[in-house]
Structures are given as structure tokens and as C-alpha cells.
Image 1 (tube, helix red, strand yellow):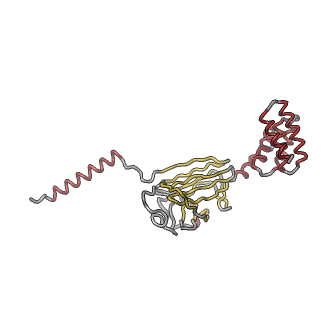
Image 2: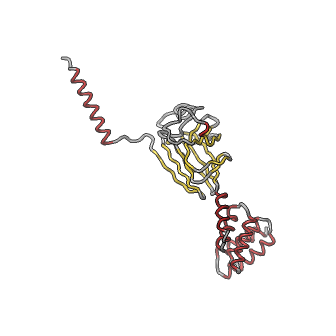
Amino acid sequence: MKTPLKYIVYVLLLIASVNFELNAQIGRLPLSPSQRIEQNIGLTDIIIEYSRPSKRGREIFGALVPYGKYWRTGANKNTTISFNQDVFINKERIKKGKYAIFSIPNPSEWEIIFYKDTDNWNVPEVIDTAKIVSKVKVVPVQLNTKKEVLTIEIGDFTNYQFDLNIAWDHTLVSVPIELSTKELMDKKISSHLEGPTYDDYYLAAVYQMESGKEFTKGLNWINKAIAIAKNAGWWDLRVKAILLKELGKNTEALKVAEEGMKKAKNDRRNSAVVEFNRILNELNK
């Protein structure tokens, strides 16, 4: 006996409706879950947003992700990075804002592209070169350990720069990005020093000492701090001794460090005594 066609169609529609109901109730687990990374470095806030596809037994570069073609560097909508201050990529100033990260993988060299439009679901059908704010070439590194899931992260960093790392399968590429910390700090210090206090001069001198940038400025500022204080503390003398040493004025630095050592001992500051011993040992080499 033949089954009526109407009955077969009815059963198929019933099965489809049940599957739809189950999907609606249970939901589907995402294959490429999204991630948001927020990091403050120096005076810059950085946000990375992207989707993370998995390898799932597939060949990635040269297959799933073809060589020599634009890739969205992730899945789903554009991978993006944003900065609340200007940065420098490949020595080019990039204005603060939000940018899509595209890439062109190849076996021996990648190109990483920072693009103004960020609302595309994939790479635009036509790349507008006027919207490319930076294109930098980097050399891929072969990883010994497989990265099952695409990982984009902030790698090593200082207050002045960081590495943007992109890793998947056995491949890692890293883009160095320089921050405008020094420029921002110089402006901040200059504005504060228009009506400076002891603390302003002292903190400005400490910054120059720790950043290793302009020791002469730092020495000038610690001298002004001491002039305001009238009676230098051992902490003032520590900063001054280090700045003098960095400027190669070892004889003067030795005298300042010895004075600082006496004050630290009088104040019974053991950690300061240890620090002055270190400075004196370096000066007496």
C-alpha cells in the first residue's frame, strides 16, 4: 500500500517544526565565541574584540585561511582594536579610535592591516585603500605547541609599547605598537609645572629617573623640589644621586649618596640604607 504524498509532507513538516522548537528552547552553542579584552598601559586604554574559531582537526593556514588573500583575522564580524590615545604603528601615527584588523597570511611573511571601517561581517568585497590607516609586514613564528583556538592578545608590554599577538594552530605573528606615553607625560608635567609644588617637581623628577628618558630635566626638577623643601630628605637625595650617576657625574653623585645614607640611618630606614649601599657600590666600582 502506497503512503499518500500529503501524509509524507505532513510528517516532514512536523519533524521540522519539532527541530525548530528544540533549537529555540535549547539554543545552539557558538562555534566561534566572542571575547573582549581590556587593558590599560601607561596612559592608554586598549580594547580588543573578536570571535575565536577553533581548529577542529582542520588545516588552517594555506587551506581554511588561504595564503595571499585578505582574512578578517577571526570569525563572524570584524576583529577590532581601539585606543583612547594616539599610537604609532610602523613609526606612523595612528589617531585614537577603533579599527578593524585584517591580515594577509603567507608562509614567510604576513601583512597586518588596520582599517577604518569596523562594521563589516567579513572583509569588504572591495578594499578602499583610503581607509587603510596602517599596513605592516611581520614574520610568522612557528609554535611548538598547537593553539587549538585563535588567540589575539596583548603580549609583552612596557609603559611605552606593547606587542599585539595573533596565534592559531602552530603560527604566531606579533605586531609592535608604540604608545604616546612620553608625549602625554611631557604635556601633563608641563601643565602641572606652571604652578608647581614640591610634589610636582619631585614626581616629575622620579618619572624622568624611572623612564630613562631625560635625566638632565630630572636633575633640574629634583633640585627645584629640594629648594622648595629647604631640607632635603633621604628620598630626595636618592633620586638626585641616581640622576647624577646616569649623567656620569659620579663624584657629585657619591657625595649626595653619602649624605642620603646618613639621613636614612638617622631615620632608621633599613630599606633606604640597602638602596644607598647599592648606589654607593655602583659608584665605587
